Amino acid sequence: MTVHSVADKNARDPEAPKRARILDAAEVIFARHGFFAAKVSDVAKEAGVADGTIYLYFKNKDDLLISLFERRMVQLNDGLKAAIVGKQPREALRAFIRTHMQILADHPTATEVLTIESRSSNKFMKEYDNPAFVDFLRTLGGIVTAAQDAGEFDDAIPPHIAARMIFGLLDELALAWVLARTPSINGGSPGTRPKKFDIVRAADWIIHMVETGLVRNASKELA
Image 1 (cartoon, rainbow, N blue to C red):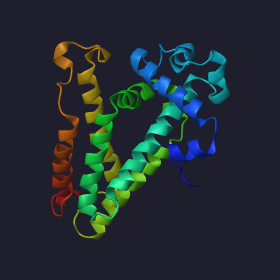
Image 2: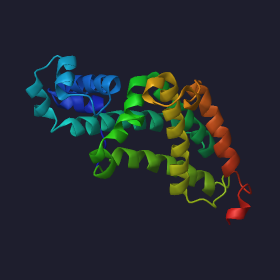
Image 3: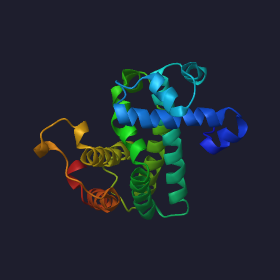
């Protein structure tokens, strides 16, 4: 099944602009109040629509969150795929990581919702198949596979596992970045809160760690 961009969907569906406005409002409300505390009526007010209008497009608050996640993930995946086109495997990995972090930095509210509030939904965590995230991992795993086939990366770690490991680095730094920007979310003592850092610059730190860990002969003990 072909994954279409949000722009493509908007062009085909005359109701898409209103749906998009509701999702934009949900993103703001979920970030402002947290997923649990947020109310559908708050989303409707932010979007400038009647409460009942929300249910013409979404089943419930969980469906709103999942739809919001899907929209942002499709946008992220489109950006990542465009960034790696025509690049050799190792440079493609660097472009993937840098582009990922730049997109997060450019959309801080979305990053907060995706890294924190999405985990607040039991339906999202346990029942949602998450095809857009599968696509993300498939793209990343493909880069690792190509680098291994080219002899640039050690093949001791299966590509699909390496992809999840790299995502773990990206996701944890995204979470730390959000918590450092909005320390009240953490709820812990000041000493436990992450220190502020430049998430765009952090891309190069991740690249260094990943490439050091994946270069050939660096992981002989795993063989």
